[in-house]
Image (cartoon, rainbow, N blue to C red):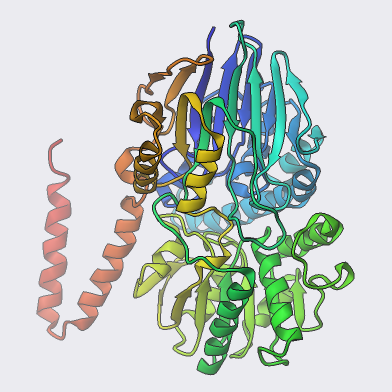
Length: 534
């Protein structure tokens, strides 16, 4: 049989990275990530896998971020028993991240089930639990960069630095499918920018049959800033936020972003560039544990401004794990920097800090990372006047700011340069892990580089392609998409929340009681008519 790739995630979306590769010698996955975004997209995490996990021989993992690794415990729970191949730092991070994710699943489901019980609705089960996560970590296989290893029959693998987070890699494959020569593939994983604390720029060989490349920032360039300029920008944001008198709340990914923030804020404190008494809270049990992994691997990191023993240990830093310590932060009226996960505000303690600060005019919320469409972070960043957190409508009165220079993703120019340096590509280039507009813009730029347009593809969820060495690909579209394309970036649940909030504002603004009643009756009449005919 020809080698076949099916895009089970990260296609048409920026999360849920998961690629199933099948060939004569077996089948394996590259990444198995959790879907993040609107309600429709998140529901994919609860649905059965569109393949049998028990038949997957092994997993190749690009890095530890949850949108690339977060469904590994679910994979194990449903029969996967093969090894997980990754770098040692990635596997170190997973020992904390996956059990933490299991605890989050249990906590979120417990909260949802309380609501469902009050409504008399059936209870739901977590996607997986902490025990599933611990079971998934019993069969791991660490590998060094740039060293070939045999992952399974007919498949040789080599890891290359991707420059995204600690341990992140691009994955080179040579797949023997009985043809005169192996199929050569390269999965970019998430690519880091050229200028980034901790990591060198991404690298990999050139000349492949097929390349699968991320495109998160394919439609935009960030301001070209150095690490020094980035710290200057952070200094300005902190100074202005503290002048407003309230707290500065920073939603942040627990892995890498939180450590970068601590590192830069530590430099600013040490150099006297922000008030020396400013308390800095990292309120994330996971970020606390991950920080210890960074200290363990500090000798592999680049651009460290302090000695390893002092890394992330400034006396102003308060790294909290205990729930009561977290609650105590909410009693601080102003003057504190609060860094908390998750980065897209879709789970975790950050939602409590937003609920406590968003409605305050003197507070500031600073976004330092990508916000996927439909996430709470995306909605706040987009200028919403009101958001819903834990079932409560919260007015947005805080100052909302964004700082793009902390992104761990390559921007448009850097993505294009990375692709250019990997050419030629004889079979096809797949643009994944990006919104459609970003992929379209990047595709046009790659065509301008001389790659034929018919060799560049933007697969949708569950699209499949037959691959042959040096040959054109054959697309096999799915029979029925798991998610309608129109529900990926903004779904009915986003529209429902926006509608109910707008309705409440409209009723509140109306002084005539009869007019209010008339409006409600008009809406009731629409509901009674039912949906329009298909």
